[in-house]
Amino acid sequence: MSQKKALIVDDSTVTRLMIRKIILEKNPDWDILEASSADDAKTLLKGHQDIDFFTLDQNMPGNLSGLDLAEDLKKNYKNTKVVLITANIQDAIKNRAKTIGIDFVEKPVTPEKIIPLLD
Amino acid sequence: MNFLTEIERDSLCELFNISLGGAAKLMSEMISDEILLTVPSLKLITTEEAKNIEYLANQDVCTIEQKFVGGIGDGSAFLLFHKSASLEIVKMMMKDYVALNEVSQFEKDALSEIGNIILNAILSNLAKMSDYKIETHIPEFFAGKYEELLLRRNPKTDNSILLVFIDYKLSGKDIKGYIFFILNFDSIKNLSRVLIEKLK
Image (tube, rainbow over all chains, first blue to last red; front, side, top):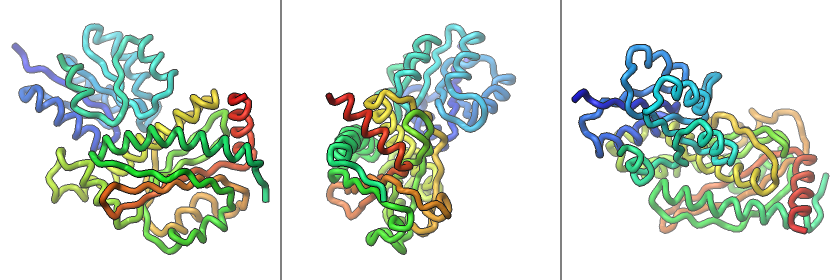
């Protein structure tokens, strides 16, 4: 069985570090990739198309938000779990996440919020 | 100087009071400690008056500014720590994630993230209660003298600004911080009117 991969997209090093640690404590053999913006993530994905789990920050530098990237990803990764991580807990964001068909987690990230999504 | 009526002031105080309850819970969750908040002390003051606030003047501070735009008007929300407390807060947040001797490397990023979460929680609640849409920008970190913070963002204008100062204190620790908002007077007045209408 091939090694599972997660891609964490967040401009905050601290949040990436936390999510990385949470995933690896549950799944020590996973390969964790990181990007600090949606544009960086898209570039990185050209070399890694076999991603099993995405976490996307909503507000990042650049033109694309987490939701914009999620919409894009859902076209190519139909059965992959995509999770939006957001500090901006307005209903409009939650509703758009539901329409796109992705999960969302309100910051701060904690193991209790992330681990159930890994199964 | 512009002024608010008693009912306008009360409605804004109530709004910030409710919003802060949720924010305090989030911050407690992030740093695994209890946060004690004071009742918001709402002041309408000018930038010049803000510079002379006794417990902040001449102090080294770290702030995270969250600019926002929307129906409520354009403004900024700030989370402010005395510089001496900032590293302690980061240690509390990062203790399970990095070695203690590495904590200082993450100071700016960790404080920005705390600010992002806290200020967004307050602004989201504010949007919900007022039925206004609010869009927030990426948070900006500042470290330096408190006066420089005010000078660099509003060097010339002397419009009335809203300063909702909320002191918070970590239970059992000598760490205090502040949350405040800057909005022009018309936006403040408009927000309070919307709230009063909703309360009727």
